Image (cartoon, rainbow, N blue to C red; front, side, top):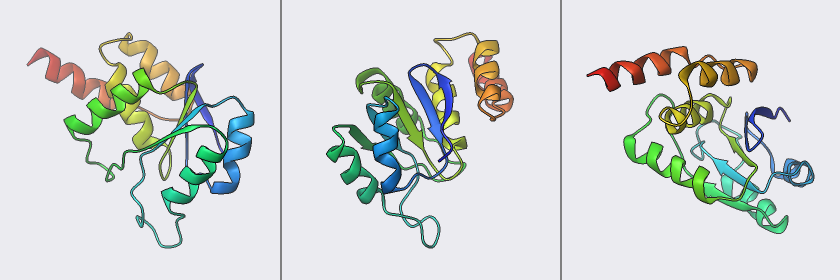
Length: 141
């Protein structure tokens, strides 16, 4: 399991398995967000199996599937709401963690300094400079 902390209240991970959930809960996470559509890849575990383990561990779970490269405004809004409403710390996962990091970047663009966003995401192994640049361009439009 490869948990990558972005803030004290938020981390991302590549695909997790149902058997990882107990350890995730023991690490202090209280909520899980799945951003990976079921059946995206052959042999991938179903989100329902992860959700069942999360519920057993007393955690909240949200399924918010994002097709790779297609983040809608509605999905970004739902992700922001989840960050605001679900108990933290929150772990979000997808195939590699990139989609979750993109959503976090979009959700926090108007809350944090763009330099801080880039630094935090780079420390977790993700380059969000392109997303920041796009958001800045849209803001200036």
